[in-house]
Length: 262
Ligand code: SAM
Image (cartoon, rainbow, N blue to C red; front, side, top):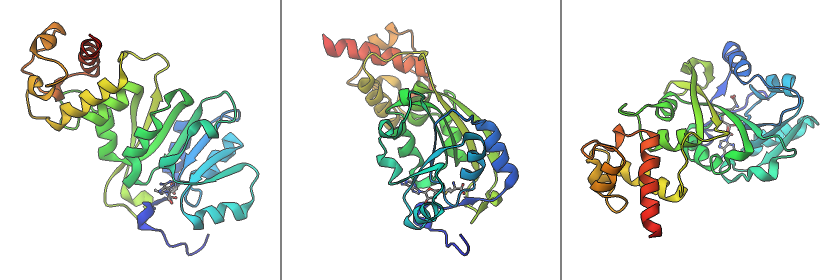
């Protein structure tokens, strides 16, 4: 579409660097029998190169002008879902028993809530490749004791293997964003390394712990576990939440959920 005016409110920064686009497609390595879902296709910078490999593609887009752009193309290979990606029900899109491969140069303002939304149904997803703000990728992939390690790292790493693939500078986009970007691959675990017996207890414990990031564990986890529970888990109660691994949080939440049942 010529002379298209990008819209700030939809986080529109369109990719135009062909080397970066090629690198993303190579990282995804789509195959013809897979079901690909692209979130926010914009003017198709990733969509059309993806279609060369995948043959069909579902796209979710919120912007009416872009929806019209795709509808006018009347391309039988593209299924357009005119909606807010934050409200998508993945089970309604799945048209085979294959889990979905999800792709997107995501609007940065919705990327974290969108990832949390998609992670509610990890069994429907084979993998996700997202362009995100670099700092968000660093948070997602951070290890314990790193200053960026927190709720996002733990909740995503609990559900997925996380890989930071490569960095992308602002000049790769039109208009260029004010921040650096990076591409991340999230692959839901087929077999989780650690299992929280009660997911909502685990989620609420992690949430509470990082609201009190600088406090000792004992204080940060008040109401869930006490000092003897922390010691029983072989964890030093003088540590801070940011020092605990995903496995530590799972262990503590399993102790807490056992106590809830008693
Ligand atoms: N994929 C294109 C590219 O790489 O050039 C566009 C990426 S642009 C960063 C983000 C895209 O997501 C835009 O097309 C925007 O309209 C769309 N978008 C923004 N908010 C959305 C939402 N809530 N649901 C679905 N699409 C959304």
